[in-house]
Structures are given as structure tokens and as C-alpha cells.
Amino acid sequence: MPDDERFVDETLTCTAALGMESGAIKDSAVTASSAYDAGSVGPQHGRLRNDKNGGAWCPRQMVSRDAKEYLEINLEELHVINGVRTQGRFGNGQGQEYAEEYMVEYWRPGFASWYRWKNRSGKELLPGNTNTFTVVDQRLDPPVVATKIRLLPYSDHVRTVCMRVELVGCVWTDGLLSYSGPQGLHRGLELDLSDRTYDGREENGYLFHGLGQLVDGQKGQDNFRLDLSGHGKGYEWVGWRNDTPGWAGHPLEMLFEFDKVRNFSAVHLHTNNLFTKDVQVGEAG
Image (cartoon, rainbow, N blue to C red; front, top):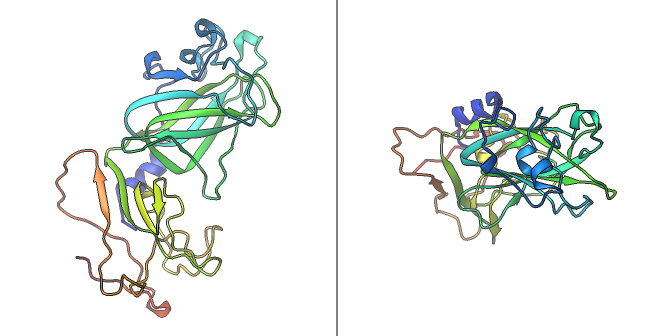
């Protein structure tokens, strides 16, 4: 995986509120699938710790497992988003509505459709609120690189929900939109060196137009045969075999797409050299 120190630092220390509470994110950048009343509980009121008008965003329809309603925030430029904060509708003490759970979808240039976020165990649901006033802070791990975010309230039972939210992160200064290349080696429970958090598409063992474990801020341990993460042996690494049929004698080729033309003075790679397990550092071309 690339040893991108700046991305590692950003995912760990990039904890600024992005502007829902402060108003730095303008009303025009906050939209929704619907609102019970646009004037009092429209999307522009879905701001953390704000209690104006109706005091939150409330979708027109009650929410269920369908999760069709959403609050959308347009950040206009690429951001790393690694956290979400939520509240219910306090409404000057009259509110009774909050989202017990929710999901996150995101979009960035190059996507054909919105992508549903999953944690490293493959779960999509995030815990929400248990009352109308307490702020609940959830970390997004892996972090999201996006220009637009949607929050989709969810409920096992049909109910009325309202939300106030804040996003946590910072501007994604590296400007990497995607990387494409062969999917990594997968041997089930024995060893999994595939890119399991990749958010692009996969066809015939090839990854297209997404981001994943190569830039998720996590570094692999030297001995990838130890399951230190709880996600399986080799989870922190993406790896390939040079004797794969049809690939023998050919170099690994990957395509990295950026938001604009950039001048590179150096490239740093973090590679594994556990030669006792037949893993060696190859020559970079």
C-alpha cells in the first residue's frame, strides 16, 4: 500500500466540524428528499445545536427499513469525512422525534451513482439518538472521500423522525479521485489480501474508479499472517502473486486519477518483505 503520510495524518487528526452548526455550509448546499414543512422543518434547519423554527429537518413520510428519505449536504470540493454528529428535534422542549439509526451515502466526481458506506465489518447502520437533545458522535472508519454526503434515517418500526447533523473532517488536499488495477489475492480464511473497502466497481478481477485500502490511513504490520485487526489475516495489506495465470512475467500496473494535473517529485511505497512466507519486494517500474 502507498505510504502516504499526509493521508494517515488527515484521517487521524482531521476532526474539524465542516459547518452545519456554524453556518459555513450555506442553506443552498443543504437539500433533502422531502420535508414535512419546508419553512419550519426543511433541510436548512437540520443543523446541529440549532433550534430555529421547527428545530430540525423532518422528512414528509415516516421512516422505516426502506430508508428512502435523506438529508443531502453538498461540500462542493473533495473532503475527507471521518465522523458524523447527530441530534433529534428538541423544538424548544416540544420535540419528540429523533433517528435511532441511520446510513450514510456519498458521491464524488467519477461516480456513476451514490455509494453506500460500510464499516470494516461490512455493516451499514450507524447508531443514532435515544433522545431529542444529546449529541451522538460516530466515527466513519474507513473514512469517506467525497464532495456530497447523504444521511438516511432508518427504523425497524415505522416512525416519525427528525435530525440535526454535523459532518467532521477536512478538505482532501491530495485530490486523488480513484485508482484502478487488479484485485488482490483472496484465499478465504487462510489469507485475504484483497481490497475489501474499495468503493468502485469490480469486473473479472479488476477494480475500476474507486478508493479503498491503499489510501485508508492504515498501515499493515510486518507479519501479515497475524490477525491483529480482528478482520482476518492480511486485512491491512493488498497483495498479488506474480505467478498468477496470464500475469507471469508482467509488472503490476495501476492507474491513479487526480482532480487536476499534478507535478510529482517523489513516490513512496510501503511494501512487505516477509520473505519467510515467500513475500518479496519487487522492482518498481
